[in-house]
Image (tube, rainbow, N blue to C red; front, side, top):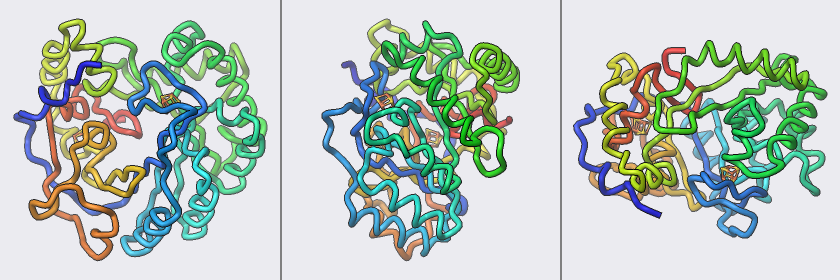
Length: 320
Ligand code: SF4
Ligand code: SF4
């Protein structure tokens, strides 16, 4: 795989500083029931890296100390971490909103049959990637059979109240297949809602449209086609100053499965750790009593992916 990282480090992206921390995004490990070709972390069934109990305890202490409002869990398939339920239950008991970045198909796997019920009981927000409402496009990105399983899982979630009942939010994520900016979030959401309802009777709350970052697998594909510079230029040409004020790294930190801290998930994938007082590779235990407000954010050329056009974050468009 070609590595776009060295080409992204030198940047003229404007300096950005942190505001008050509100969201903790946590990667619970690389184990996953799927092994998608585009996976940014090479997750799969045989990966053994999983966040351990001690780190989970540190997360909960950090949530208390910093009065974190939102816990956003990702992976791999975060539900496959043996401490997933404990973490979710403890965070919810503290009144923290929990977002599960769910690949949907895990909800149908043996051993996880009661996971959907658990998520509903705990009123966990589910955010799931469904790259397209057309079967062919999904199977190209995620593998054979994934589309019909994703639809079955969405129908299961609808049956238990997701997408319709208050407190049971079900959001879908779309990102474009090629080196183009995503379409308008609002219009695409209308199309998704119409088509999924018509074809499968599926309903959901919001569609989040996310810009592809020129990193990991996608960065490698761009490089192998000689398109990396052109794609970064497209992101730069569509720079919007208004989006700079709301980039997600201002109020979020991203934690890897070992407990190390990054300014965002993309920086985690690029192995660009958060820097505090010139010290890089900070563990969450070192931030227990420390405010990050005003701390400079580590940036690179990929950051233009967050500010281009309608803007992009883990919660979709920034101007949406
Ligand atoms: S479902 Fe997500 S984490 Fe799992 S292999 Fe696919 S892209 Fe990676
Ligand atoms: S890529 Fe990360 S660090 Fe860069 S602007 Fe986006 S959220 Fe912030």
